[in-house]
Length: 180
Image (cartoon, rainbow, N blue to C red; front, side, top):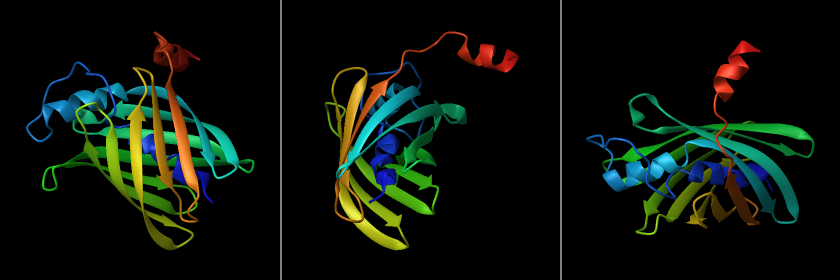
C-alpha cells in the first residue's frame, strides 16, 4: 500500500476549479486553461490509504508560456520522506487532460482526465508500483473554491482518499526567501 498513490491526487489537482486570469493558447481549450489556473499555488493534503493516514504538501506552477502545470509533492511514509514531480497538460490528439507523475522508489502514474461542466474530473489511471502495472478509476471533486477531494485505488486495491486545502498566498514570500 503506497501512500504515494494517494498523492496522485496532487497530480489531479490540475483542473478542478474556478477560472483564472490567463490567455488561451492554440492547443489548450479555454475551459481547461481556466481550470488549470486554480491549482497554481501551495496546497496541504490529508490522505488516507486503507488504514494509513498521512499529511503532505502539493505545489503547482505554470510552465513557461502557460502550456502546462508543473507540480511538486511531498509526504512522509513510515518516517521516510517521499517526493513526487509531474506535469499536467492537454493531449490534443485525445482531447483530454493528461498527467504524468514520478515518485521516489521508482513509482510512476499517468492519468487521462475528463473535465465536466462543474469542474470535476473523472480519470483512467495507469500506475507502476513495486515493478507491477495496474489500472484504476480516479476522480477529483471540488468542494468550494479552496478544497477538492481525490479518490482512487492503489496496487493492493486499497481505497485512497486525499483532501486538498489551498493555502493563502503570502505576499513577498519568494522575495523574502531569496534574501535569507
